[in-house]
Length: 134
Image 1: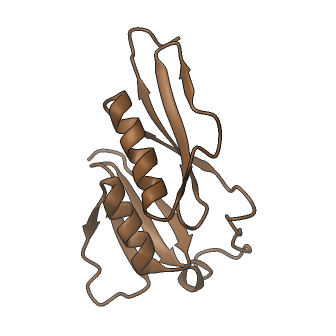
Image 2: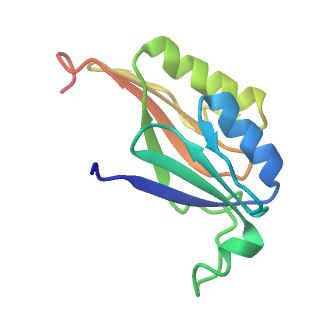
């Protein structure tokens, strides 16, 4: 079995967040009768568990970060081309996120742009020319 990663992300509006991640290219695993979690599939080994903030609070004894004010992590996503980097960042901005919350990187065979989802979770989307990247 391949090792997988599933990132739990607390969200304010589950339906809006689902639409955001679907627009980025994720697929959704049916939620059945569960109304406070949605599993969004980025790849065969990476999923995002969108969890209402109230449900997320049951998963940890710590205070849930307000990701519109504080960074809890930056998630890097790889794509197959420079054009796809641009498409993902621009789609993020079109569906309630923010694109280019830092200067894009375009050096040594690496091209990346940053974006935030509607809840402020931070991402870098990156394409790398492995033959040129240092």
